[in-house]
Length: 550
Image (cartoon, rainbow, N blue to C red; front, side, top):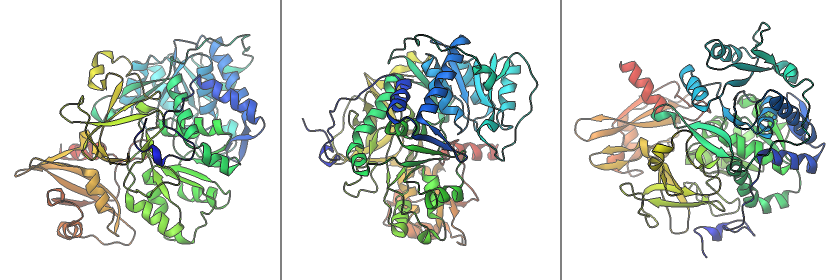
């Protein structure tokens, strides 16, 4: 049977290959047996071997079991990018618990909702001043019952501010929590179908929903990528040094960096935050070979005035995900460094994988790539999601695969809003070409209807990014007396660039996009709002404008 795009797959890869699934902790255990004393994580110039990481995860699991935090319980991880995250992530799952990720960048309302909705009564956090006081406020308010407090200083000196705390029975330091915890003769029986992770998403349309990601979903995500990269890794024949500046509480970094790279036996260079010069040192001095980022990171890299004189020759893989990549950004990187930056597409609900580009495939920079092995994607009509559209027609992407969530936590009654049988309605608008390559035009909720025409902000943004003075841009719909809605562009300029008028912009865009798509208004801003993982956020921009108007 022919599957769309399969002829462009890497050598020896088939769409219908069996996808291996299992338990998440077994992934680390297998790697510890296979790679032993090879370094798994580097943090603050300290390396942690595969064996040591697995051992520390087992210590955490034993402590969770001693505290009654096993199967059927939810544990909140309120942690940044430190080794405390993987240790407690694998440890809690080994004990049979499920995890809810809490973002340090979330506000109080969102955090409280995630805690109460997920049934998490215990939170693992750090003694950093930016985190511990916030967890303590939830403890004092009765939202949670206990805090397990990781000591940041255990990983070496840093310039982070630590929060003082007084001894009390409902707060235990991590070192005391694990001290003397006996490992059981037999670890709890966990089923691959058990929910491993409640990953909250969709907060732009109200309070976020918890996507239920099972052990099977998460391990399938790793297996799918393992199949896809098999021939590439065989040619490399050496462990990669992988930069991880993306937050581990986000699904992209969790599955496509932490879990996948640990499965391969690579070294993860863990960064607490994205600092451009620190990342460049990791590439130029430490010779990092893989750099997965989000578009805003790549915009920062391509904005370096001396980029064409920087040494990025060690990089074998540059990838972008999490949001649509402006085509011009990839073009600048290739022009100045020779590196090809490829983007893919995925969602929290798909445990991240969805589509990607083959490393040696044809150059289709505007595409999000081909559907990965085992993942079936179709395009369905806006007005009838049961009707599959032919190649070239624009509709909503619908997806099925072993990595796709079975639904949202405590939202079974609303399942029909998001699922047609076992196929998940993504909310992404796009099309597939005749060769099986997929293209996104926008998110369904960002669609602008102007004079009866569908106008997609992302297409306008891609055109504006070709302007030499534009650094970043977002387009949203605004009320228009004549057309109902019209497009407005919000732009940040490159260093030294001068502002231009809306007429200048429309003249520049003429012929690049349709007349009905040309922006009717333009605003220059110092900065554009982002989500907690650094993606530009149209919803946050709309919220900002709404609050100013009010």
